[in-house]
Image 1 (cartoon, rainbow, N blue to C red):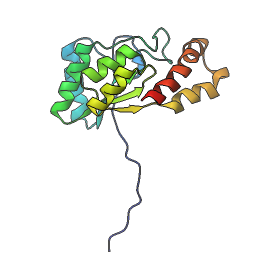
Image 2 (image 1 turned 90 degrees about the vertical axis):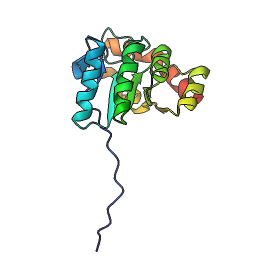
Image 3 (image 1 turned 90 degrees about the horizontal axis):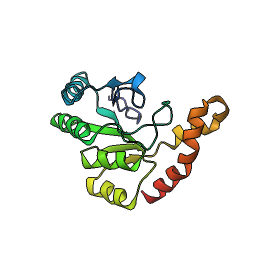
Image 4 (image 1 turned 120 degrees about the vertical axis):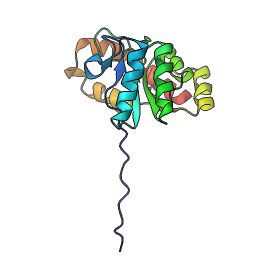
Amino acid sequence: SKESKPDLPKIITSGTNLCIPKGHAWWLGKELSSIEDAIETTKSLILKGVSHIKIMATGGIITEGAEPGSPELSPIFIKAICDEATKYNIHVVSHAQGEVGILNSLENGVSYIEHGFEITEKIAVLFNERAATLTPTFSAVNSIINNIDKVPTFMKQKLIPQVKKHKDSFKLA
């Protein structure tokens, strides 16, 4: 007789994130030096068995000197990564908080946006046209807020202005 298996969560793996030199979360990821490097790194991660590729399209809260809304990976890098991933039927996930980074991501083949602090009407339409998914990551923001007395000053200064934008963007999406 077959044993019934419980419904378990699906784990989505991306391996290391792809970012610009000294960009958001650079210490956790692979700093890309060229388009060729972006393509080769994407292919290498896929051949190692990742189910998704994660890119850092904008700065973020936790990296000192990286601003949450500022674009980091350029559209040409994003397109090259997405094109390579598509060859293997792999989706790209983009850490994108600001409007330009979100647009750059969606316009160049990204399937999933994490955070999405600055979603506009135009971006909401693009999400629908591209059948893209937003992961608003309220838990990440709430984790920082709930431990605000323990986080560095630079993180507090960057997070506070983003909270309302984050909630408003989610409502629009």
